[in-house]
Length: 208
Image: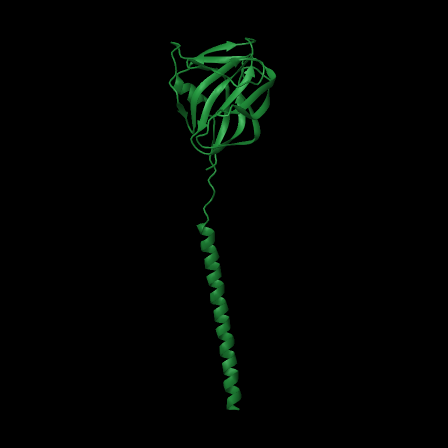
């Protein structure tokens, strides 16, 4: 009889020990998962930026002239991102409407077309933003954004003196302004330092 009582007590003790072990293990796993969750940082979402206004401010290009039906040109700005990022939208403002404005993003070094977008500028003197499929950009790589148009705003200094490049506007560094007389999508070969023809720009978002 005493032997039965002993084995019964032993079984009871083992069951209680098992329950204690299971409880402790559950607490450990919960704590461990909680710590793991806390160790994963929230991804940083950077704000979009449009560098054009800062560019005009830094160059001192405050005098504005309107050119309408003034001959076709391919023209725009050479730039490089100071960080890895992407272009989410094209922005443009013209002194005249143009339902088929061709905008090109170039690999500056290779002189090749990376992206072509057709923008419907439905109203004159109105800033238009066209969302595009995100265009990834490498840090310090040279790009150029151009449009082919016979309408534009010419912006220059009051004394017509040259701007000093490079010009940093947020995370974008502008290197030069280029143009060529043509109605086709052609890499611009001429460089001008004393004005900018636009207004053509983009919304940039840092990713890393």
